[in-house]
Image: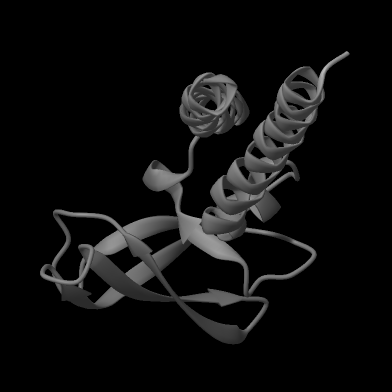
Length: 141
């Protein structure tokens, strides 16, 4: 094998490693960005009536709410539109940790979450593979 062939082979393995790295980073960042959902999607949730404290339509449509579980008051926020101060809404929370909550209608199903995770990971990995293929092609010249 000549020096050029060895260089291309090392470059290809480096590209494969980089694509795997992108897959892992894409997966971690996608799941991490939805951390408050992750804790609720894969556990059983309880629901309780909550009240909207305030809204932030120009800040990711945040809706701040409060709710009570076993006599203790909790506060949370989620990205949801169409609510006004004083509105009542259903809050889904984790029985293990009532601080972990989302607005019920915003909580995706397990299948929606997994499909989104797979799609996001696939897009990041595919873009990484395209960039690496271009780099291999340029490095082989």
